[in-house]
Image (cartoon, rainbow, N blue to C red; front, side):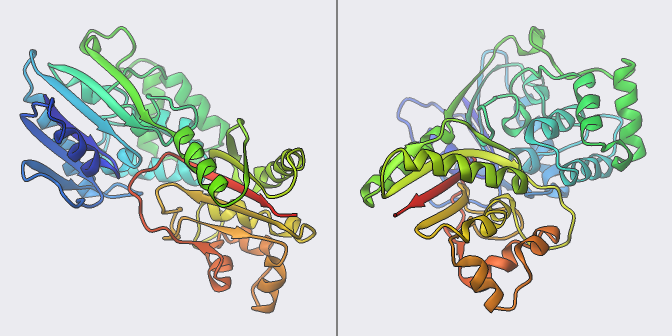
Length: 388
């Protein structure tokens, strides 16, 4: 067996697999944000860049391609994927510049693309995503993934470097059109999409591709695990945990209040001291130049509605401990938040949303949630505590 781990949890995942008594690992490479404690000496570590790829990410992608290219047909690659893999291992497809690929990804993200739309574009502009990494390996490839996407779709986790890509150039074009993002993309990427639609540029490896005949994939950690752990913790704190099965997706500021109403109705069906728990991953359309993230924006959008709800606390947190550009995991708010913000001389929640400056709303109040990086992202948790 050979081990290639990519993502924020890459060093820890590789270390855990290599520690198994039944794992005969010949070589191992981890691509992450930073090394972890206890890494074995024979695990090579390369640092990529996150959340936006840079030259380090390019070098990491090239090392990964060289690593898998050395495997023989009778050897086995364990491909360990976790959140952040798309940015940490990134290289443009042949015929496309890395700068154009990076600019296109950033523009599409700022246009509010969800993870599925973003990954469809990424896979088609990449030399390693969408099954391309597995296609470069002569041996068998088994992907073991920590899921940071709603639905736990292996094709979306890390943009699916080890599994066939079901999306097409037509899907990319539809996703770009849905976000009105085509004018925002570099001309070279616009041309690339047009060439793909006209079949002048090959599509990504698809199900049935002979190069991926020995590729398989499994999700080994997901949001449901975080929800289950949160429910255990809530019960230990004296709350009755109630889980909302519907995943929370969409523009953070738009879906927050409907989520609050749904969570309140659910809580009132279960008495007092209830903790309503949900999971998902929202998006943020960047309009301003502030500091924040999707969890912070989600809670900021709730502050006015919470003003009339004493005994209710809402929170949203990223399980990797880092929400967007904020450096914190998320935030909490209750019926006092808006009044306390006004007393601090802060602009209104609405104004701060327009600036995408949610961190600088909650941080002066001491209402951010700081866990520190967990290096393991399985999406976001939204929580509503009702004490009366």
